[in-house]
Length: 114
Length: 116
Image 1 (cartoon, each protein chain N blue to C red):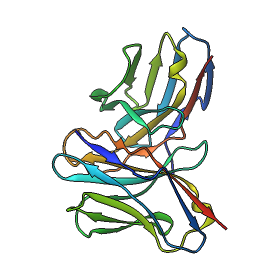
Image 2 (cartoon, rainbow over the protein chains, first blue to last red; image 1 turned 180 degrees about the vertical axis):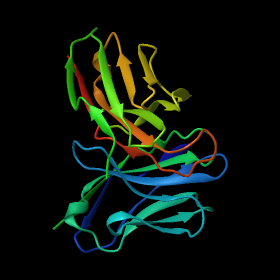
Image 3 (cartoon, chains in turn brown, yellow; image 1 turned 135 degrees about the horizontal axis):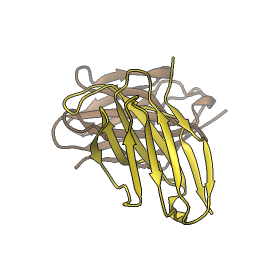
């Protein structure tokens, strides 16, 4: 069975500083990893995905994520945070083959202060 | 670009009533997924359809049923509503098969169901 852990309920960072939102996963076989962002009263917005290839994946709005197979991690990063990045971030995993349901982590609230 | 459309956006029902949520996938997407997000919780997979056939089933109560129609839109039918059914219900769509598919899911804005 697949599972995702987001160990931090909230991450606080000052605008302009780098940010990291942590995610570790567990899946049988090769993982297919995602980050989604959710703004208040809004749907889930796709940020980026990892299938295979380069361990550093670049996504929307300047976000990137680093896949580390040995640590089974897929941390979300951004070199310089914006106040508008404040939102709820979900890491998700599914298997590459077979049924495609996403298993989400519990979410991390990112708060960027001016 | 066209996105996933869900209707209604908000729905208020009484206990024991029924509700129908609708989802219109992105054009040419053939796979639809339903997720339930309770207050302060992560989205939980309910059920999915590929080419009008159920492709996977998660933690969907027996009181709920869903189907995908010939135009690929999907409806989630919920009966004997309970207070605990109050949640945000997301529909997502993708282009894919039940085999290997690298296509991501695109989510709709959700339907917020409140059961009083």
